Length: 316
Image (cartoon, rainbow, N blue to C red; front, side):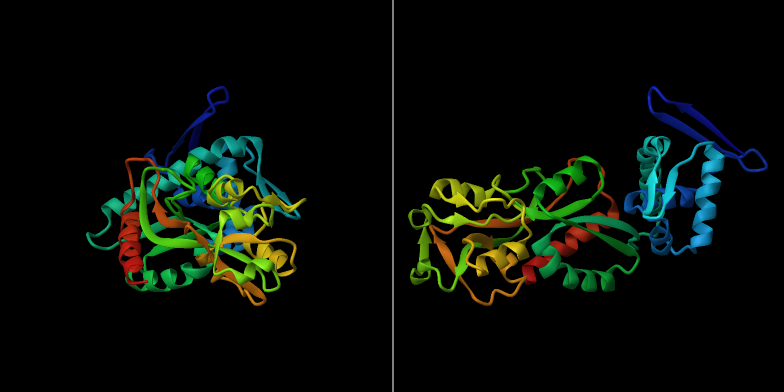
């Protein structure tokens, strides 16, 4: 039996579950499945990720809806989405799942890490670092699952932190000022251009040489280092382009639509055939950091991941 105390005005819900003897219990697995399905918008994929059959997953969601007395998910051809009541319950369900994981980490055997680490990553780190990190981390911590969230730009990571959707993030010092940044490496910026561009004859590019040039701006946008350089150089933006992927930026530069400024980690992630890269004078770089949220509690699994990354970065 389950009793639900629901307050629509305060958007709060007290969920009390009882077994046959009247003892309180809660089936966390149902809430975990609901959260996963709502986040990715697909019940089948959520079931697969949590090792349930589709039939079992459908039954679990239906059972949870019956227990709560509300419909949680809309089912459609394109997947699932939370209902209005489901959206109100979702944030509370996330807290239930996260706190359950924290409890299990605390009561787990000393020295044995288990759980989930949710990581936000900028694309260049996702391409260059994460395959190596995942492979090695799994060997050392086989019971810890890494959930990778690829961010198009820094704003995505800020948003994920504000919603408590990630435990840490690989980002750049000039893109995040969270106060909890752990510096890892320095990543220099380069001017890139077609091999036929007149600036190719210079070994280093000053801001004066960039004056009047047409710039292709990548997804970082104009709020951070690249934008600062562009404003100082009084360059012009390529028309009708905003928030391009790194790969699209490189393709447009290769096609002689303009020049761009990209960090080394990005350039090493893609083929730059037909392009020339030149350092800036004076040099400009970003610092790749591991950023932690502004909260007191950091799970043991996240702490283990942070320590692992600090050692790993020293060897890279």
